[in-house]
Amino acid sequence: MDRRNSLKGLVMMPLVAVPTWARSAPQEAQSANVPIDDYRKVKIRKVKAFITAPQHIELIVVKVETDQPGLYGIGCATFRQRATTVASAVNDYLDDFCRGKDVNNIEDIWQTAYVSSYWRNGPVLNNALSGLDQALWDIKGKIAGLPVYQLLGGKCRFAVDTYTHASGQSPEAVLENVQKYQEQGFRNIRIQLGGYGSTHLSQEPAYKKYQFGQGDDNTVDAQAYISGTLKMFAKVREKAGAQVELLHDIHERLQPMEAIDLIKRLEQYRPFFVEDPFSPENMGWFELLRKQTSVPIAMGELFNSPHEWLDPMSKRWFDFIRIHISQIGGITPAMKVARLGEWYNVRTAWHGPGDVSPVGHAANAHIDLAVWNFGIQEAPRFNDALIEVFPGAPTVKDGFMFVNEAPGLGVDFNEALAKKYPAPKYNYNWTQLRKNDGTPVRP
Image (cartoon, rainbow, N blue to C red):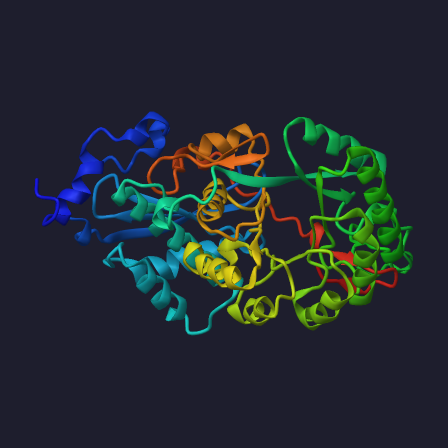
């Protein structure tokens, strides 16, 4: 076979030969092992969304089927707060829009789908677009016979360094959990005194006495939260030692000056970063914060649009860009954000909570492996049911995340099993937070 003149030959080799990746890939993730006559002629046949909740959290998965039998891709479109709306955007609009398009032209499909609704940069449409985009990268890896990180430039590191979460109702309980995770090999641990804002420290609020709001609304007492957080850091740093990296998430629960005060007082405990000190509506406060403290700052979990991160990153207002990859539209825009950050020494710290599917965590990790300015990654936690529905999911060992080395993103999706786990009725409680007088607090 003359490989100098035959693109067809180059494509056929990893697909019809016994692939080396098959030794480590689960059988369910081997859908790439199909012969393709000409990769330039592979077309999209169908795009469809699924909602499943094996871990009791709504996950949205997008499957892109091609006109080649056995060749498909999957992507994450999880926006649990509006799950059915995202699924509708995929099934009612993107499916029709994408049919017959060339699967190879990811950038073109992304750009045209991005403007197909005219109005753009909202979380519903961006998540729908992300599911499509990640699935197309999955297909491209399968056609090439390579993991996606190889298509993004190859590895910059052997695995992805992660952090995990340690919380508790008291500083002593937090410390106990920190030490447990240290024994498991974690070097980076986020510490929280109870839920975001330490709501358990608040006294019975006045608004409930006057029957304002809902009975199960949460309440935040800013000063109790600040005091408790300082005590927690002091206890953990003293007992857990200087080697462990400590992270914390304010989660926009404080007024800007309160957040600045807390961060300045945390300097003595050397946080790895403090996350989301301000809401996206208060971006202008970052300039003042940067002048007040040397504590590294992470921001971006609620970002949807380039208008929200372009200027702050270019001004170096924060140290870690912490976007939710499906929230901005998938791997294609996330790589552009990472490349932008490289020029301004802003590192990546992609959002990776329970409301990211295993394929979404794989997308995070493939980018993490390939970009030079990787910072840290929120570690996933998968129960047995989730691993069964998503064979080939990333794994965590000694605090590092490893991806499946199968072509594409390395994760498959079992549609039949997914149906066993319907989405629960969404619980709004965690977003419903108030001050003592009943004023809503933005998460």
